[in-house]
Image (cartoon, rainbow, N blue to C red; front, side):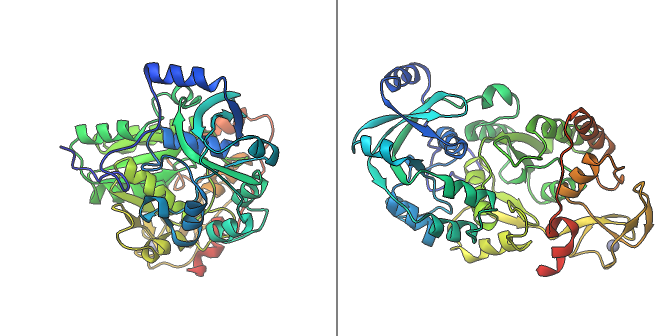
Length: 423
Ligand SMILES: [Zn+2]
């Protein structure tokens, strides 16, 4: 018997991925169908549905669910079940016109030029893209990477139940890290865990993340270091480097039996608070009872307040999810506390001053942001030892030294600590 939280809105996981003969037959059939090209985001959503991470979705959403998600965080087609971000597929007008309702189509990944699945088209509809952006991203600014993608979508959405035939390159490329929800649940069950905190990562793990993970282990049976192996922004550190850096940290500074590392294929939307909720939905499907929500979870630039992603969990109905957020305050290293600390614990308000070699001069708090770490590394500046463990720094330095072109990392308010007072 599993003691883990149940999947979202369902007693069992609902993976849409076919296997064995059924998969081979579907693929053969798909080759004769009209191809609907998918963007990388749409492909990543399809894989999430394939592996059961988006349980209980059975395909791309129709208009009512699109609107329900945008305006009320719920899907009318699933008795009003909570869902925070529309999962939709778009097409250009000519293609949409050529497809009739009830027709089966092949879902085609443009990037890998391969068939990913099939869909029985049950609905074609147009949406107000600006409305979706306003609701989901809280902005229609086309500088926002998530907004950009919605605005660039085809004008018609196609909806219907899907069958998935491929997980793309993830199982091969991220062997040992890429995990389906059923696989993660099995590991947790073998360890007899009932409470698991997910730590979402898309940057290398520095001491702040380690601190969050240690706290989570204190209050839960274990921590699931769950990192994104889907698409990121240019300038972000590739997954294989992050995996190596996390492993170095886990091997040297954690009790192995309390940590599981895994990867998931979803592309970031950078929707801040809304995305934190989507992260919560699929972490529950992975068997996690808690999601660590720190500063600026899934945000980008200065679009969201540093704790908006925590607030939104208090605004949704309390029975929306079984998973609970583990809200953590802003954490940092404090030279006066001589340890990691947070705004909730440390009484020393002044910022630490370091010399150009990263050695302590005066003050107290050293804010550790992934963006700052990347900036120091890309500029070849020494990284203070309080920022990250030496094993991690060594791996990251090696990666930056291997880059042919210098990456320019822009600092936004939240990364410099300027937004600390916005709370
Ligand atoms: Zn302090």
